[in-house]
Length: 426
Picture 1 (cartoon, rainbow, N blue to C red):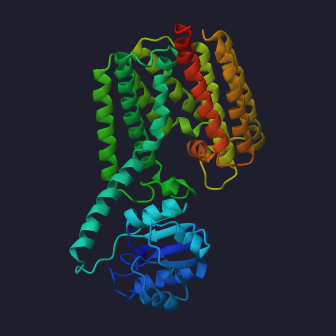
Picture 2: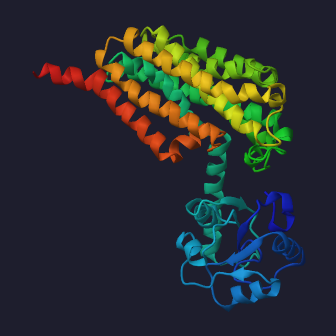
């Protein structure tokens, strides 16, 4: 982790920047900014709109701000209160600070990038401040580790529950236990693969507009730590997989394909997109295997086209930005332009056929309303370049899409479980 004095212009996104004072520019409660911190702050003031924000308040903030010709927040609110940004009428692109519990939470609440720097300490901090630094360091380590293993990506592994859900056996505790074991194993082995990929690609990722923020290319963890966490994830995945009947075969196969994808597959056009879809199919097939539930071929086909559709949208979005993945140079622009629409149509067709001939639930056909809306709305966002580069984030931030997915899930639950329950009482 770098000190404030070690930051460079390329580390700071364009726009307004909120800068903490205590522990970032000076030791706690002090006022004399060091020479090296002065140079970096002057550099920031030349290229950004800088606002100093300190919970200590008082004339000290005004004095330091006046010294460098930058703005200062002098209101009564304290970080992480997001109303500070509203009072200043500024939407910062980044918050620079030394405490994730204060500056980090503040940046999250106002939608800014958090740039954490190593705290500047005098050695004379009171016990309360020292305890805060210790707690903050622990929380930061947990937070960075969660980002390293990409906990939010674990949602993909919920696919192992799909065969159980559509078979109407979601409340069978023994089968649910097997599926949960598969979820844990796939989550851990996927995290090991993510770490391996980040370590191998850290040089290229440092030049990528968004991947440079990942913990490995950003230097927020050491390589030995990354390897250690990856090894633990792989070990847990194997232990769990050997405890669940036959799951080890799927986990080892998934990891072997991950290595091949990282080393070779992601550099080959078309193959790299197909590989992503295969990873999703393996999750569903493994879920069906451990619960001994046959998986509909139409459901597999729908998943295959749906994941290809999302991946194609992601590639199209990436093609509009410089410094993204190298394989994009091997795709003609018109190919990436038309591919999402083609795959969206195939996804709708496959799901429609699944709802008619691949399922025993007659009412499932009406769920096509939600699917068609969701696919078309997502496709609209792809061509408007509405964050299709980050489909997981888009799902949670695009309210119409989120509502469509939620209603689809509610309706499926009613069709598979609720309708039969109602009939039993008639």
